[in-house]
Image (cartoon, rainbow, N blue to C red):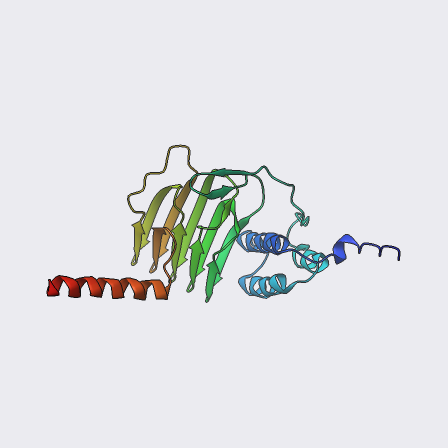
Length: 226
């Protein structure tokens, strides 16, 4: 049988990377005043549910001249203790939580500069399995009556600047000293009636925390019986 013709580019199924790129364009359009927050909410839902590239293009066509969903391949390298760095364009540049929550974990690509906005909402940003688009990453976190938790991986350098008004920020990066050539993540935090936590390493599961408590209680019992 002859091979079936390929569908037009616009009818091709959308990839996760193309959906994320469309979401980034929409979020940037809100910051530029091209979209309202209400419009953004509806388009974000449509973007994540989109099945084809045509559907994604229709969502971003009236807010940005950047409607090309493809991205050129970038050079790949790995730096630090298992930290993935693929230098080049692309990646999530905006994470917006308004009257809700947003969680990023597992594999995802973070842009060279990423801005997190929490308004009466919260975000969980886990970079342990993320792919960095640059050896230097700028993460800006702005929270109003909300909050954010950030997990950074081992093997990266981290610099944090923070400001809290009627709130509090907590930074606990442990005692690790990554080498000078390791990837650098700069985090800028502004919290108003909010709070943000920055910690190194993976978040332990509820089962792991229960196991730790049980081991601690067993050790204390052993010390009392000795």
